[in-house]
Length: 492
Image: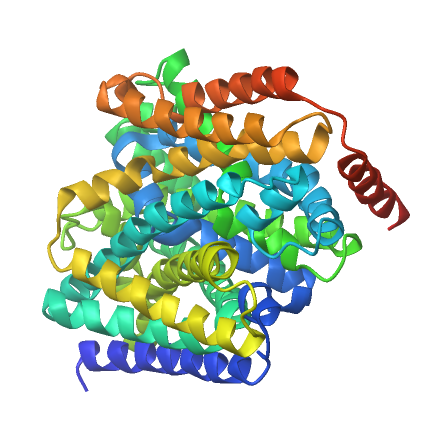
């Protein structure tokens, strides 16, 4: 058998496993809470790794190694910022969001929680936040499908459209039938695949480059500045890179995992598991890039045309084709885990926050689960149609979608959990101001100097606080829920 056939066999085994998990989760899904939140039954390990896999996408295995391969350790500031942001998210947001969403009318979506938290009878907060999720994630999902299609195109010389159908078909199938449980369980497996692959590639590559000491000596010979954290950076540049960590507080597909964990007590174990997974994965990505620099310099017979393919190419060189196929599957897992997580959050926004809230308040659970599945299918079709043309505007949008979500939802989520005097008007105007600032900052071209999330996050924070102070009225029901969420937090 040819190497390509053996690698395709490995990827087929991986995809069959994902579909099997989707079928298993289908039989454990009976109502809307099961479909969009897994019945709040996730254990700490599944919560931690599914949050990590949903977060990282192909950036972890391709984007970050490619950046470090080109620019050296000066590119790791984003990884440092993300690590700090993820830790703060687990420490401050996870336990409070778990208790508060339960206390506040058992909220199962972020828009639903915001409406229940602020007793927003106008429904504006729920509708606006639901629409923000729907619009941004439709384009986000489209970008993921594009990435998967390009992956098959570049790895196996398949047509772009064949790759698109394969990625969209398998991801939609297990997400549509299995819902949140399928997404979380597959993300857990995908997270394990990613971290194992990211550790194995640099470890085996070090044997080929003479060990760590010889590897770093080779890099210094090529360009000693590659091992300098500050070469080619500025203070503003470092701030911009580390500000990526602010985005975690407002990513719906990540923080929804905090709502689904079994109990607050489990968030501590999940934090430990999640942060270890993240640190090992990021270190693996960094060392993959560094050892790749030495490897391709020492072995003139091999060339690396695309720095973002350093992980893929090392895997194909170092391992048997069957094992190399699983390395490729790890890249595909990173892409599919994020797409599926975004699909389920978008589906919940359509089902719970728009269809049920506005059109069918008396809808049965069976009807809502059916509509949720149809929502996954509809969003997937729209996203796939957008992905038919590799339009740069879609990919450009994703470049600041992280900032858009972080600046729209981040300050609102933090203030809603920690400040009882925040109001629905403060949340609504803060959310709109944050999103508008990110878009305006990017359109003005200032993003090349300072990352959009910094001004967007600050503007949202200021507007939320000022408007809340101007519109605050004492509400005993809100006060009671706020105190109850803290009491539950302390009791566990």
